[in-house]
Image (cartoon, rainbow, N blue to C red; front, side):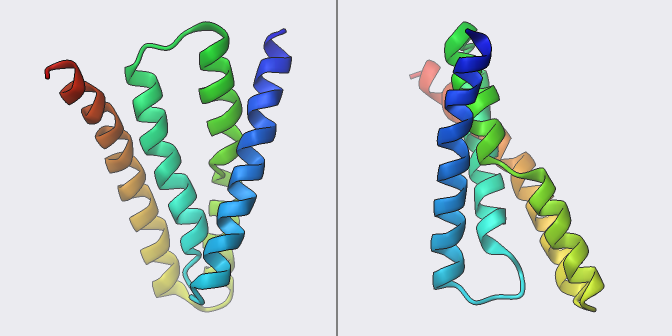
Length: 121
């Protein structure tokens, strides 16, 4: 049953990632892949929220392991960063990688902070 729950979340997460990535790339023409950056940062925020809610069992498997595991994309992030280096866009590659990492960490912290603030209200 665990595999079905993770798989169901994964299907929804990968479709969400594809749709959002496509939507961003159609609207913003840039060397820096903002779609993947937005996906990974928003996924970090959502994972911070889910983790802070102490969700367990099948709901955690569905949301964190399944949905967010498929929604965020470290492999695409690495590919796009490498491609920028390969295409002599070294400055853009460094900006993309560092900003994504920084915003991902900040996003996770913001997600956990949102829950902490809510608990103290």
